[in-house]
Image (cartoon, rainbow, N blue to C red; front, side, top):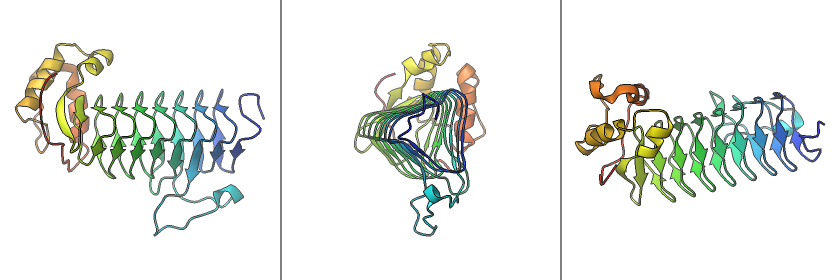
Length: 245
């Protein structure tokens, strides 16, 4: 194996590796799986086990018995030690380009994780969740299955995310509450910093952009993120306890 791929890693059949991929000792990667160029897989990471669903067969992919919809790790993504990512059932479980999945984090079947997103240590994300770009999920947070977390949102440590999180929202607490907007994230994503106050005003008034085709004219470049959020279907947004931007 190339020097960047440990001889103590297990790479099963049906795994496609891009250029300059790094895989540490003790990592287990089962097919079908695509790992794109420049991805970094840490020691002991486990990628591609069958979905945890009692209605599906638990196939022995390590013996060449391939099944299910696969996993895709995007270009430049980092999967740290001990992370677990399961196969999709009808779509690839996906980690977007340049995203980080930190140690002991768990992505269940059919999760779609966007680009440039951070899933912190010990986070668990249930099946079928959709996580947008530039999201930051704090340590040991838990995301209920089939939830949506929109672009740029920030979830506090230990938060149980049981409802959907709108764009660039800050959410924390038990029970979780929408407590402001991620103003720093808005600026780092290249948006006009003044748009943080605009978005904060909408959230403070209870406008979470669900159930309507209306996207306000004053959202500027944030309109694309709001349109993505609305396109996710039947949303059940987090409750508000709005304090500051």
